[in-house]
Image (tube, helix red, strand yellow):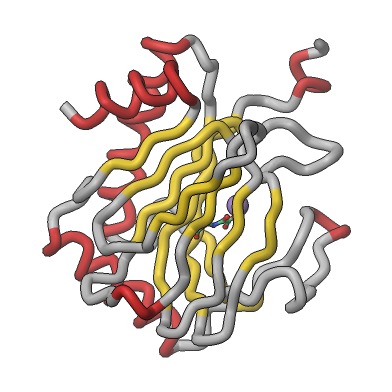
Amino acid sequence: MQFDTIIDDLAERGWSLQRRFLTSDLTLDLAAECRRREARGALAPAGIGRGEAVAVREGIRGDQIQWIEPGQSALCDGYLAQMDALRQALNQALFLGLEEFECHFALYPPGAFYQTHLDRFRDDDSRCVTTVLYLNPDWQPGDGGELRMHFADGTQLDIPPLGGDLVVFLSGDFPHEVRVTHADRLSLTGWFRRRPADILNL
Ligand code: OGA
Ligand code: MN
């Protein structure tokens, strides 16, 4: 069971790469959904930060995104259901107290990248676990666009965005970046959240 491997990896080292998490059919369908959203102009330049502080700064990240909401399509609802099952499995095994999942399509056109960052905002530690699902069935070795993970011991790992592969990691623990892509690079990026500490009164 794929969830068991993800749970073991997160417990042992804080991150996991699950090859072929989705079937190629489902991956193609989600890629087509991302393209449909692009075609109707629904993708918008991603911002940095959150709320009113969001600023679009292309020097930092060059992707275009659209958030997924429940009820937009049966396909996306299916993915949200799968991620909710993962959320419950993580909570049962690792007591993470994850309460929500938020997720967006992302499209990096050629030349786009995302500089090294952490998936946590300075003023909000509610993002707990990051998930990135890649939607590029024909990715070639020269296409760039690798996810580069930086580890505490100074080593790094480049992960190509191969269709159907899922990367999961503890959001606050791994600086990471997206290397310059040379082809359209599609993904579904999400975060499991717990309630912010100020709501829990910690
Ligand atoms: C992000 C991010 C990584 C990737 O959207 O915060 O780091 O591989 N994405 O797309
Ligand atoms: Mn990130």
